[in-house]
Structure formats: structure tokens, C-alpha cells
Picture 1 (spheres, rainbow, N blue to C red):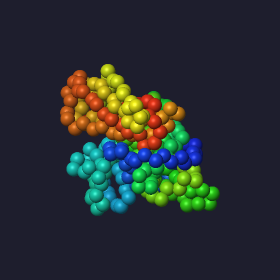
Picture 2 (picture 1 turned 90 degrees about the horizontal axis):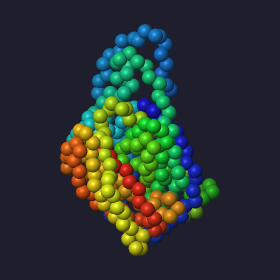
Picture 3 (picture 1 turned 180 degrees about the vertical axis):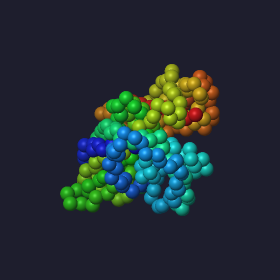
Picture 4 (picture 1 turned 120 degrees about the vertical axis):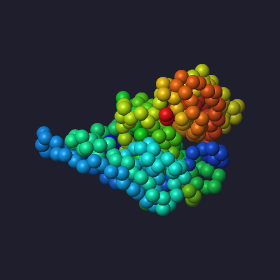
Length: 309
């Protein structure tokens, strides 16, 4: 497992009045991740035989999400989802028992290898918080992966300081997709329920991320081609159209994250489009998705595509 520790800059909170549109993603609450484990060091050049790793189980507690559970056991979110096909990762039920597959570290130990984690350098940008209709706020921060390897299982938190000496509140922050490609960027999102203090600061910290191995086979290459973007005249919504193409091996699940940016490059809206219809390798399908702004006018839209075989 690789751990990333990155703190983004603080920003003053600037609320915006529009309501949160239907279809905008909501982040689940999760407890603060545990401390990064100390890397293992080989004591002998001769590996010691290890027992085969066996799956473990975890009973879901209130406030937990798959990102936090995956971090705790040193596995990826995708691996837990694959080991529990009957569980909806977006709707976890308290008391449900999850099968936790062996971690990559356990599998390496089975082969007599003691690995050392490699740090993953992710960069979080400034936070933009926009007030929701019910008196809370959505906060966004763009997360960049400058490395040459994709990551998944990103765990992050946003913390609000309500004025000098005021209340400190913290929420888990999530990406709209499981995977952050090499050289890619996606927004971290967190929702703070009411009441929302406008006089304060908010910061974001990335706590962990897992590198996606080349031979994992959990993702398929996919892209959006022949795309066009139409921004409504009032700037409060934008429509993206194009053709989705998947690589060799096909895809059973296809997600597209649409991210709306204002003229200053701040995230003002996010929406995830999902397709559960299987596509064969090389097959194309028409795509059309709409993303809405929670505040400032939309200046442009960016996107990322994620496909799973």
C-alpha cells in the first residue's frame, strides 16, 4: 500500500446562493484514517516461508465507507467491490459483513518478498465552498496526479475552522471515480451539513492512495471522442456530447465524471454519468451528459472516463 500525505492551501469561504442540482455527487462520512504504517525491511536474503493469505471479514459500522475500510486493510476499493458482488458501494448498510481479500502486501509475503511502500505525490488545489439550499455547503478541491502511475482508493479529508477559536469540523472527501489516471485531475468533494459558517477557513489533506498495478486487469482503456460542449447562456449548466470508445477486452461498467469550472478554474459542479450496459472491445456508444453549477457561471468543462471489464 502506498501512502500520500499532502496538504492543500487554505481558502476563505465564499458561499454562493443557487440550489444543489439533482444528480450532484454526495460524499459519505468516514473516520480519520490511521497512521501510515512503517515500511517493512528484509532481515535476511533468504525468504522465510509464509502461510497463504486468507480473506478476512469486516462488519460495517456507522459512518464507514469503502475508502476508509480499504485503507485500514491495505487493499483497494476495487478489490473489496470484486470480493463482495452483492454489496452496493454507494449504499453501505450498517451491520453488513464484508469479505476483505488479501492485500498486495500479503500476496508478496506469500512469494517471500517484503515490499516497501512507494510514496504517491498527489497535489490538492485551493478549496471552493458553495452554500446549498438547506444551509450546508459543498466544498471542492482539484486533486492532481503528476506521477506516471494511476492511483485508486484515495482517502482525503476537508477541515473547516469557523473563525478564530471557533468550532473545527471535518468531513471525508471523495473523488467521483475510483481511479485517478497518471497525469490526470479530478475534484475532491465533501458536504458539510448546516449550519454553515461563512467567516472561517477550510483546508484539505490527502491521507492515502494506492497505486494501480499494470497487471491488475481491473480497468479497461476508454475515452470520449468527437466531443462537443454547449454551455447554457446563463452559465448554470453545460451539456457534453460525444462517442465513448473502449479498448480491447470491452467494458461491463462505464463511468464519466463531468467537472464544471468557472473563469478562475475553480470547481463549481460535478456529475457522474454511469452506464451498466456491456460494450465489446472497440465498440462505440453515443454519450450525452449534463453538469450543473452550484454557484459561479460555468466557463468550461473537463472530464475523465473510467471503464471496468
